[in-house]
Image (cartoon, rainbow, N blue to C red):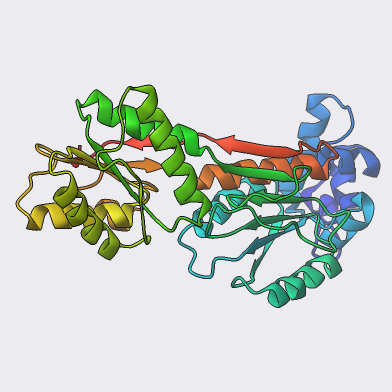
Length: 339
């Protein structure tokens, strides 16, 4: 049989052409491409070789009709800036792309009306599932009107315990930070963080106080300093802490912006970092952590892994293997010159 005889007559290869060249039925060729059905490895390989030879590309519409799936997933974010949601979405897209699933990105900008508009479009497009993320770790209400399409909430968990949520393990992150400071001999630790009504600030503050108490210690000023997620707040708070408790030998900060403000204030005040005072941040935001002087020791929340895990759990849910509840991704400590 010549190569010309194996070529499809109309230019674009069809599944029948693949089946003919591989010497199998059309049904067997279809199962080999979808990864379903039982067959000998050499049979599947013949089909894959035929696909490569003919340059065959499956027809998405035909696949959708055959499987009942659109092979698309919606990625919805409330974070227009993208500081936290972009790494999450990239991690999710990597996992979905490995399964040849197309991604539709929707930015709600935190607007409820815009969210409903995007949801209607995703439902109309018959997406197989939806991943929802945002800029904060505060729990959010579940999506409305999307059932039976499965949804997974990444970073910002759903308030419904029956939903699937993938979040950062705050306890692991705080534990790494506090234990690192204690291991370097610090015993007078101050904690500066963001607004008290933010879940991230509350959780990190609570865990810090509990871990210090378990070690027989308390915060150097006797309390948590809630404020803003900003360098300006870090500078002001550091100055206030040193006036109140001049023997403070470490600052554990709720994010890297606050920590960078702290290092600025310490440097301007002639306090050596880390010889006299150590500083630890949170988030491992390179823009802040590496530009700080000295570069910050910080907690990496592994946002990309949160996205990847969310995508994998969504794929399981699409295959009717639903794992309800909140699933955590551990943090890691990144040690730099500030400690």
